[in-house]
Length: 216
Image (cartoon, rainbow, N blue to C red):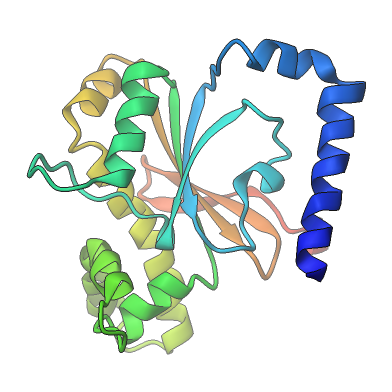
């Protein structure tokens, strides 16, 4: 129950801030949301995007799943939670940016690299992370002779690129990107160092966006 009390206390502080001191924000948000950014992040408890980027309510439309993956565009009549959120953000909210936010020490990518065949009966995670099979295959091919941790880190970054590529398989996204109305961004948060990296498509690699405090 300690966690529940902590959450209740947290809500009271949220309430005091946004319905007391700064109530004007929610007076506006009551009328509807108008975020400019769709963020696709990982379900990992350490990488809450709103906390990482110090956002206010209404700043981000967020989709979180294991390993921050985007499946390719499909119209097979099945249930597509991630794709439906993407469709809503792009077609209805008309966001101008989509950020895929990956991170180090990702359990989903580790599972993909170490054992894609999950030990659980349903194997939901094992099947889900196979979306990034192309990333794993690339890493095995290029870095298979390197230590495992380096391979996993490389796969975490490569999986972000796979998700960016999969986003372009959605016709309504490709159309907006080509028209200059939508930007696709890939970020990688290094939990160990507290640094942020950005995928630079022009050089096909990640570059430092925000350095670690220890290196400043």
